[in-house]
Length: 226
Image (cartoon, rainbow, N blue to C red; front, side, top):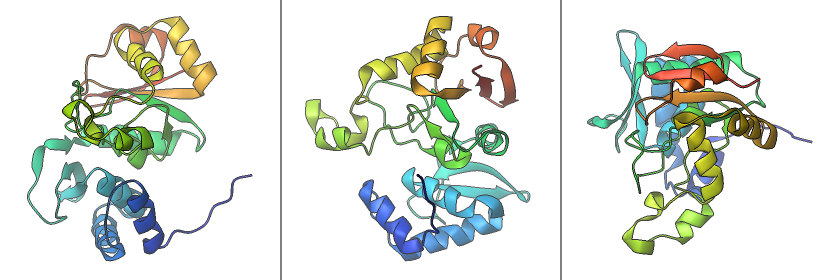
């Protein structure tokens, strides 16, 4: 049985500390106030996702246009870590049009978003903004990567994915999809939706043939597994 309870700002502080983000509950409160002005329906979820990714939503012409990294919520924007308007809209589409228990697969893992070897695997905006679980998103705060800090000269968020076989399956679905891999992702891991972002890496045109397109925004296409 799953039960739900309201979270206090101190609860959120504890959740973030458990994941390696040291932040005071007053800072969480400040971020929620900022998100409430920009994005009333997703204030707390957006603030938590942003803090995990060291990001902030920026309001432009009365709408949230992107999420950008910044240590200070009111500080300068690092353009390399921008989450675009299209990426944000795609994640919100999942929030509005899918079931709470649905699982998503995505090729977004890194910040900056382009997937490269030993990238900073702390991009949490897909799950943070969609409110859905991902079979593989980012692993920078997992126990395995934290324990591997310094291995081969790389910091913990730059360590490889803890489950190489699952990660390889996830990536193949976007780059070289086959019916067998899509079936396995759906049947073994419960994946119902694919969020494919061309900013993160190459997405095969065959994917649209094998999994119907349900939504497109900017660099992101959302496919359904049936």
